[in-house]
Length: 439
Image (cartoon, rainbow, N blue to C red; front, top):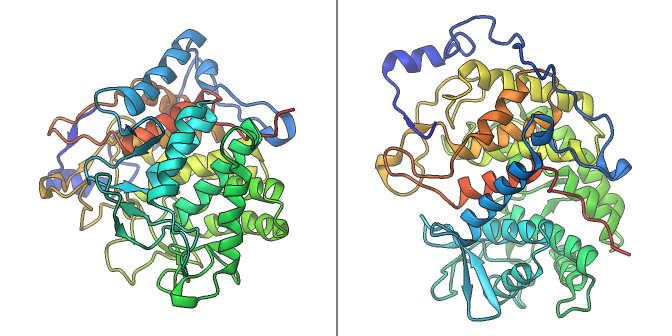
């Protein structure tokens, strides 16, 4: 399971032919037999029903096993010897990309989302205090935005610029915290969310700082400045979060956020390949792979792993695009299944062929290899929320049996692999929810 995939020239050639490879059959796109039958996705979202699927339970695992699986995943990522969460004094904490030795808005915002989803207010408050102190700009043209990369030892910014997905997650997590705990327990969560939102709408290009969203296309930008305002990252498109903003931001831009949710869905239609369901890491607003950076963003790589999870979340919460989403899940899981349910790798050209260049996992050049990475194993399983085939159960089982541990060559990423693994366990156990206001 946790082995490095070492490709010979022959194996790489075989993989280029897609569904004639690992399963050894040209009909591998056909459904498989499973005693659990075909996966049956729900037809209504949680916004309408107030209910969340426990796919693990449907798959036959006991509730005690599921609870233990979630608790172990949280322990491994936040508390265990290979944790990525670290406390500073009595009142702060941060999440670190330990292999790259920095703190990123990606990780801090993911940590906040985990904490609010699992009702861990103390962890949430510590993370927010650290984020506000060391990452959030106070004043100037970048006021209320966040430095995307910070030194965990000194708190100094490695980069002053922002990554738009960080702001997206920060605002959503704060709105959820406001709904969950109110605003009079030490932190005004809604006020903090509005501070970011109001500042976002004041960004007019001064010093090249822009809105997080391209207001003409109503699509999230790669970065909110002139260099990234006119292109995007498909994994930043989380329409479910924008529906949350439309409901709970109350800042006068609710219709814009609702429109952005619809625009995100339409963009994803354009960005994913019609046969494989794969998308590029970076894209033009028309969905075409971004080629202005050469090989960096034109293929399905690490960022892209998040896309099936984001689409499944939108299905589970709102089910507004369910027919396309079910078809997407079928195409995406069929492709990976044809590559081999326990051998599919973590980088492809969007047509399913093997990239000429492999993006290294970390700074060590020896890690420039393809793997059956647990991060993609995890998010491909979340796509089963939209699954209509019996083979969707196989992806759930693959995640259930996965281990967050080092690969055979010693490479280990408890940060990105770990957080996506934890998120996926939450999704498939019904513990990643649209948090509405408590009475």
